[in-house]
Length: 179
Image 1: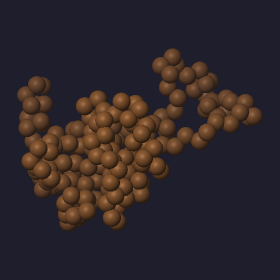
Image 2: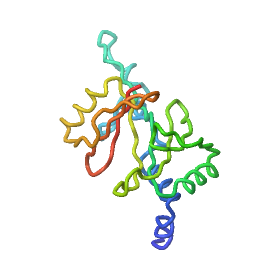
Image 3: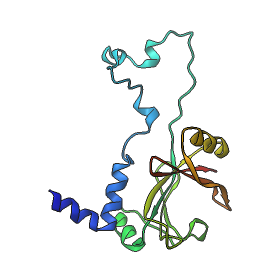
Image 4: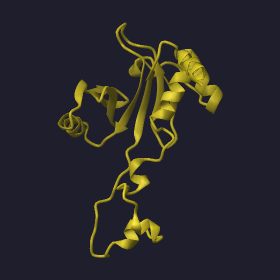
């Protein structure tokens, strides 16, 4: 088994695919997963939803699911990664988009893009970075900083695409995107 995993991680296209799956890209958004407190949900056990179990006079703010608007994959093997996704899922990457660092992109179901690009500088490491769609990027960045995140790229506009920001938390790159 160990040899199998070593073989996978030696192939960049397979490593990126495995990394995306490990990041939960095939998992439903958090808000859709419902309340999970680890103690078991008696309301669920009784066959009722949370909304059905609440008194009618109490109103709770509407939960919104987070959406990945741009999934950025940085790799030295752009053509190989694009070919692997195309072969596995019928993805059709376009020509490089200069506004997105030369990324080859394809639309994601539900909106947004997946982009595969080469490092933009010699010191840029390979990464899979999700950019979460937000209504107010400055407020989102401030919230990430209050939670201990370190800003790597302040909110920056990309003409024709929107505004993005990058922060690092827990050793992982994260991004925000405002249209």
